[in-house]
Amino acid sequence: MSEDKLIRINVPVLARVEGEGALDLSIRNGRIENLHLRIFEPPRLFEKFLEGRAWHEVPDIVARICGICPVAYQMSAVHALEQIFDCDPGPWVRDMRRLFYCGEWIESHSLHIHLLAAPDFLGYGSAPEMAKDHPEAVQRGLRLQGVGNALIKLLSGRSVHPVGVRVGGFHRAPDLRAVEDLLAKLRSALPEAEAVVSWAASLVATEGHEMPFTWVALRHETEYPMNEGHIVANTGLDILPADFETHFEEQHAPHSTALHAHLDGQPYLVGPLARLNLNHDRLPASIQALISQTGIKLPSTNMFQSIVARAIEICLALHEAIRILEGYRVPDSPFAEVTPKAGTGMAATEAPRGILWHRYETSAEGLIEKAVIVPPTSQNQARIEDDLKRSLEASGFHRGDDDALRLHGEKIIRNYDPCISCATHFLTVRIDRR
Picture 1 (cartoon, helix red, strand yellow):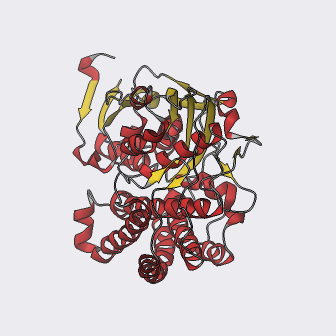
Picture 2 (cartoon, rainbow, N blue to C red):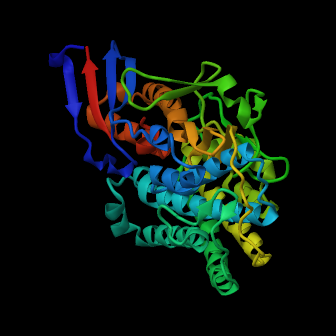
């Protein structure tokens, strides 16, 4: 790639992703020859930080990996460690963990839909710019995000980097007054969330963006998955989280400090659209009716309908949170006692952005000897690159002006809601045309 053929475009608006990166394109004879989503953030070394630490320190450490989805990191960690220690926290903890996850899905999806993705669909450069013409949409997003944050705070003391989680359960149980106060907020938020579904669907063309791809998610016997389930795919894959490394492989890409994951050698999708495609039959009848009203057909191969999938999952999370809190009781103890021992444990839960897989090896005293964390964004990296190449060529933007190409490329990338900071172990564009 010669420098005299290289065009560099700086894109400061990519503050609208978590982390920093760049897109490099080589275009030859009107076709994209090479495309690399280049992640250049330094490795964050959390897996190494965990080595030598005690088992009970893990939940608070992994919560610092991400300020947007700390619950996901905590939940995958405690499930894996409890597997090693033969700890069954019981039904109260299981319900509260699902409630905890509901909070994270609500706040993360609301933030992404209203402040990060909607400006792309409506043609604005930023959320503040969009707010001038659509103040009600931005305000609604912030209100819903606040409800999600309140759910996280209810169980963990604060909404960012929560500190209430422990292996075996929670450090404390919410009191009944706090639960009743929050229930009222959840009930009043539900109509707004339902309105988001139709609004999000109106932003996306129902046809014209379809492409074949593999989608992967957890699947539970009776419920829409959050904390538990088998790992399944539309290819017929159906495995336990313990078998993850048998089928999924992370590889270093020369152009990125984020690992790229493949399923049996191929890119794949995790996240809300993958979950919805594989689990829409697990949704309550009222939410399935909402989906029918949008005209969207499932399973969907239109990646831009991810924004609709996020809206649907906000509704689900509110329904689930209301259901759980309506039956809430204060337990005798909010946690089960834990006895550490040596072993290996693996667990996968559904972060807002997709499957988050953890594996830990512990000593007899419960010290962490090895940790492996596979976040959803690294699993989506290869899929994003594949989507970019297919979409840019199909749309013809690669033959047009560089600004149009850059804007469409940003829209595709932000549609995945990538958390680059989590994935590294945003968009300056470099184009080489000949």
